[in-house]
Length: 249
Image 1 (cartoon, one colour):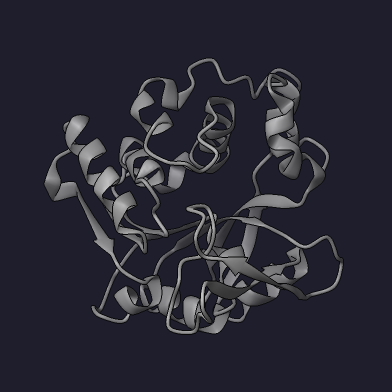
Image 2: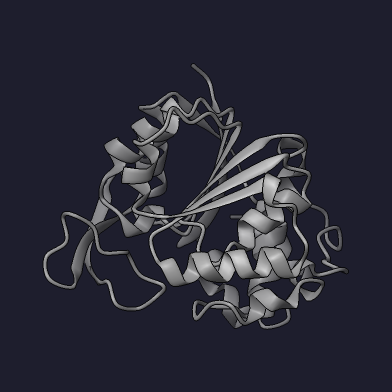
């Protein structure tokens, strides 16, 4: 995609995670400073208007990095759901380290689908960051998100390079921390997951009353912050996107 911003306007002068460096150590998954800080800008810098005073759900919340960022962006509260208990432990320890009020957050160590079925949740913003391409249960996921009645859904996902509305299948090993988590449909140590194309993503969210409102300006971000460009190749190639969706019905 071509940049949607003027040259020099997307320079990140105060990297978010440099102020909270504990997050560089709490995960085995791509905790590169440059990558984390530009992802923060793409997810929160470009959507800062949607977080103030809002209730946020963080799906597959990992070590709590994006839940923490949501609170720093002004969210009133956040609930993170993560299937790996050691990452939930890391999130709770980090939030305590940074003196976040326990009244503002809750982390649940559980399967995302199971946890969302347990309570009549209500959220204003749902974060689905780095999860959509680790599942094939799109109907169930989107139905449960829709029942939370959010206004905004922010998705960061790998996408298949195809102009058609499709999902590319793959099988994932559940052992690496960066991969899908074992669930009730797993066979041995594998999970069947899918990577939607952009048109496929549009179809998936559209079926549940959301429209793709805008893509984050990764071309502008990488243009103005060229250091360690090799860490952003999937965004540069368009094989990964950050998308803001809005409920329309």
